[in-house]
Image 1 (cartoon, rainbow, N blue to C red):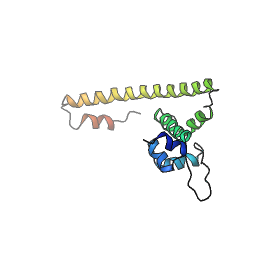
Image 2: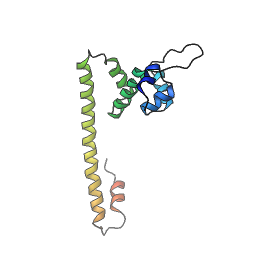
Image 3: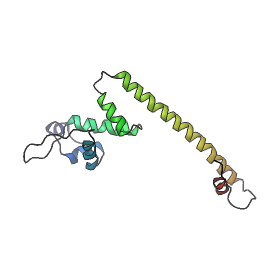
Image 4: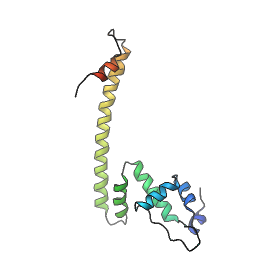
Length: 140
């Protein structure tokens, strides 16, 4: 972990990436798509990143872990000045609805797979595998 003083003085892109748990290419990609600003560079010097840059990369990674797309994260970053709580809440509610839908889909898949596994465990006297037979059945 980087010391606070080092971050205040400015860190190289490799140190930023390491501290945020991402690859250098990830930082460069975020810059290319506009999620991260590219810091100024004094002539003949390397670019230096600060605490805000580290905070921003960590924000992006946490938002991704919650299922937000990079486009949605760009919107969230645009709303991050604290004056757009209603819009931010609406985005989070939309994401929550999608997560709930996925959970319902996964529960249905789980139920079908459990049934298939249980059918197989019964030792069916039919020829072939009950799981393969069920998957091969045309039920569209």
